[in-house]
Amino acid sequence: MGPNTDGWLEDTRTSYDTVAASYADMTRHLLDETPEERAVLALFANRVRAQGGGPVADVGCGTGRITSHLRQLGVDAFGIDLSPGMIQVARRDHPGVRFALGSMTALDLADASMTGLVAWYSLIHVPDDEISSVFAHFQRVVRPGGPLLLSFHVGDESQLKTQGYGGHPMKVYVHRRQHGQLIAWLNDAGFAVESHRTLTSAESKLGGIMLARRQATNPEKRVDL
Image (cartoon, rainbow, N blue to C red; front, side, top):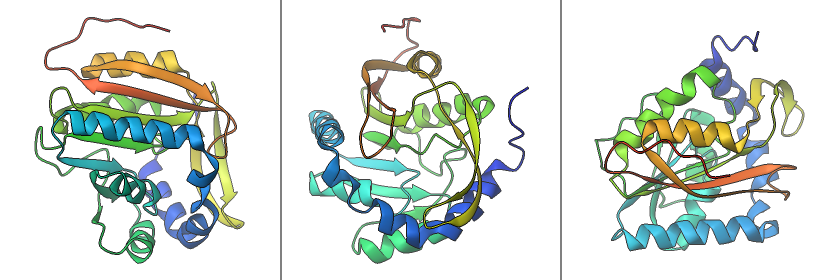
């Protein structure tokens, strides 16, 4: 039996509304301490330019620090998040950057309208039985050949987080996953994984980063670990 994740979307929204200001204060400078993550984001930006540029969605953008960094790299990035509190702080901290309320479970974006998509530690609260649906939305909105950048916590367990970011109450499950499982889900959704690695940094004690591309046709099932 897995964790009881009924109502996970509402729990996630409420939890991040509660911690939004503290979350921004505690994570604002993390990229300054994570050169490997900055290198991956720069590589992603290069992939976007190789596709001719165009809009990029930072899905689960939180308080907008990754969205803002991508724009500094010359990417036409905008943010989407489930939490009104996080969006409010993102707009405060990054004026001039576009942020919108939305859920990765029902992306309000036109088919093939995005050159690329980022989900930076934003899949960690999505239950296993919802991941395939989320990746199907990613595949729908990203143009063929467009890059997809994911980061996640590596592991095998799910834990209930009841407090965080300044000691405020939360109620979210944090799901840790192995590379092979995510690669299989992405293959099934029509993405080809080009590179992936595990690292330890200020972002995560054991973090995974995965760069994939949206295939034009149904892919062959292949896992290269």
